[in-house]
Image (cartoon, helix red, strand yellow):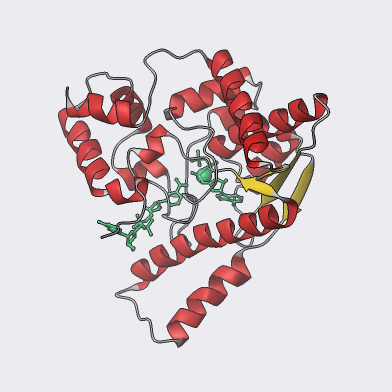
Length: 270
Ligand SMILES: Nc1ncnc2c1ncn2[C@@H]1O[C@H](COP(=O)(O)OP(=O)(O)OC[C@H]2O[C@@H]([n+]3cccc(C(=O)O)c3)[C@H](O)[C@@H]2O)[C@@H](O)[C@H]1O
Ligand SMILES: Nc1ncnc2c1ncn2[C@@H]1O[C@H](COP(=O)(O)OP(=O)(O)OP(=O)(O)O)[C@@H](O)[C@H]1O
Ligand SMILES: [Mg+2]
């Protein structure tokens, strides 16, 4: 078996894809996850990006389905800006579209800045301002997860993650930040399939087609994922669908996959 096929299998990317069927399968997954855990809430951060818009709508449909069967379930959508978000309009469009039962707005800036300040006061120095900004970015992603776990703890809920195959293959998430969650309903999808799901769910066109950004670095606001990754999502998506892609891009995907293996595994132990 080729390395490409091994990766496709490990990330469970299906050979065939039907967006409507996947909607059903993933709503069913969310309802079963709540029932299995004995939990009554789903919690998710809504950024204004395509992944959380799609996941948020699936969460809302899942809790409504549980209530139709006389069960108890609530979806808590969380806005978690770092200060003022430059694409707040998109975040508001996502919130408007998802129509979550409950919404919480938490500014993560004081906690993320406070942690960095505490570290520097405690003696941590940085090579340069870019390294400091990068580390600060991962603190922001972890601050968002602290907030979501607090809400899940209060409401007997599960924290929902938005990781999918195209991010997982590149290890493109913060370990124990946005990578920390209880369930990942988008697992097994590449990026264009996430967009296709949002499209059949009648998501706003502007969000279906939105350029992905982690938006964690203060010095490079809205830096695109593709700029950071060095390959395009089309290349990653083609690779995950088993197509032949440019040799250098394939090498980059495979070497990044190997280098980030620890992010997809449980902690090492003797
Ligand atoms: N071989 C190994 N075995 C076990 N653990 C290992 C390890 N190598 C590093 N580590 C640990 O992993 C840490 C590095 O991982 P991590 O802290 O995640 O940091 P890192 O992977 O360096 O940075 C996260 C990347 O994900 C991107 N990101 C983050 C969040 C969201 C999104 C998005 O798409 O929205 C993207 C972000 O822009 C950045 O490029 C090291 O500090 C170390 O503790
Ligand atoms: N400003 C934010 N407010 C609330 N949640 C956020 C914010 N930024 C990131 N998140 C959470 O972290 C997750 C990971 O971010 P990521 O950028 O991968 O997803 P996205 O923004 O939904 O989509 P895209 O990858 O296309 O930008 C989001 O899906 C969301 O749950
Ligand atoms: Mg984003």
